[in-house]
Length: 506
Image (cartoon, rainbow, N blue to C red):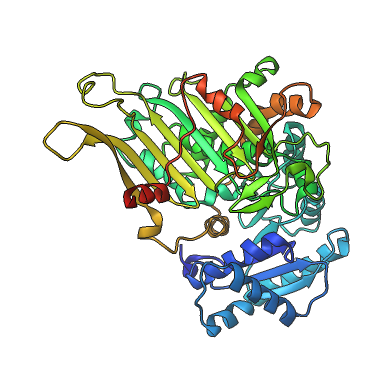
């Protein structure tokens, strides 16, 4: 829906001087503006505690857009049009007077328009402020129109199931569920969304998407970075809560969900909740069998020495917080019965990679048994980042007079057909502006995701199960994670488009 179809909108950013707003939000809104997706009439009310003149703040935003926007070439005229939409408002979340003043400003915008504008509130604030902001918005009548007012909340959404349930209950007292947009930027990534199109838009794959043909599924989110300057925060979180509970669980839902009857937000989110309810909970006595947790130690990446986790600034030198998790799940329904879903995520890994690997079962017939040492099963790899491609590997005849087989690959590369793909936040912010909650998490989905890891989280926090193993920075993870798969005859797989290109060049 291009801008001439959108209603006038007041966008209020809490935490407008923070890192998320600087790197993601303002560049995303600007890119949407350049591409013609923003409403014709909109205001960006940017709230922050530090005093700025309007010109100072707008220059600050321009610097960040130049640094972080995917669109680098834009005219001065376009920037001048956009900057007039930005208004900095000095704001103190703890003071009720600030909310009263904000209401006056929003009412003033409506008066100038001659109509009630839509309102989008983005809470880029610490989790401890969510209750205060939401209650103040409600009490001052800032977001009392269910059809026009929406609130985006950043993760982490709670720190365990009990806290997530409490937070949802508090929000339910002040807002309707339809107004709450719990954001996970992974769901805005192009190739994550493409899972739905790939599965349900192609006859050749959906009939094979079950335990009759699929042997295993692997989901990997690996990072080369460490905890950077977030040691204090990360040490209270860890990989299980920071990555598994949200990002990887959301990807699991996209891969495993049943076909929705329509591409509609309620239907799609219902199917995702169905998946989470079907994920087998891991009993306390089985945690060591299904999971591996680890911390990175001193190592080397790209020729540069890296500190071990316990030596990072802000980290407790006796910390029991994991920086790596590998685990195996089962989805106990008719479609996926018996298929292992392997997940792994870690910091300070050998390369940055987010991918999904669908491994199909071996060919049952022995037609070519004497023509090749080993038939390689078909494999479908969906790379999310840094590459964005879909790779299908299959067996084919090797050119020549003999009937000899070799593996081959077909690749669809997003960057080759669309090098300037919109970023995840652009997709999600546009959906929020349009009132489309398909890619946002619902309260029951959040609670079920926490429930999946509840036993593991409790056991690890108590420290009475699961030995903490280690892996050197710059490695592919601990040996224990390889053993987790070997028990069922599997190995970790990945096959990025870049790897394929390297092989072909060689």
